[in-house]
Length: 309
Image (cartoon, rainbow, N blue to C red; front, side, top):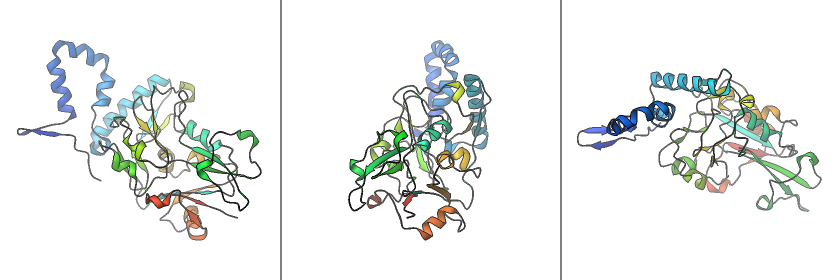
């Protein structure tokens, strides 16, 4: 993986973010001392190394600090996982559109699992309701995300859940000017929230509307916090950064299904290792007629749709 080098050459010395803040704080003199003490977490977070550049010792230091801060803030023991992509694993996701009933349980299971803001609300999954015509063909562009889920399924309609497609040829990662987002070896497009500068170039580049901007301070009630976190996944975010679905890294890298998969009442969702010929996703890819959303854009999504009937 290409590392993000934020340093600049000045004479014979390289200046990186850490040395910059050290020199800046020293230049501020006495005024910087009480400010840094009062805002130690801010300084530690904002000026920490990019995740892909940190040594094991630096990662441990950052994780220890975050676990302590989150545990104190939310009044419960928080653990932050840093499990890397597992060897021989390339995740893929399938969705059976003939089964989906549009109940949107996946939307809210995702919110609960991934510590998304409750106010303002942030949803990674959008379920689009579309009317079938006489040929059974639907029009995605004229679909709507706003319908009454207690009335589903409705005759003459179908439902298409949309989230991050974890694209092989991801335009979002190419658009990021700080390399705060990249594709992991297991196929998940990850974000280092502390390196995101909130420019929203990735949002403009994504043709699926999968990335969400924190315009305000996320509100996450302490009694609703999921304490089982991953550094690149469901740890709490902050105002001014972008976030997205990560296929529940805190679960999937431990052999569990994503929360949206687990909660689906009709078994419409299929997930697994595409490199494993015995996985459920490989069965779907090998035996179903699958398609990918907006595949004409050559983004090469690893999220697939199919019909079982």
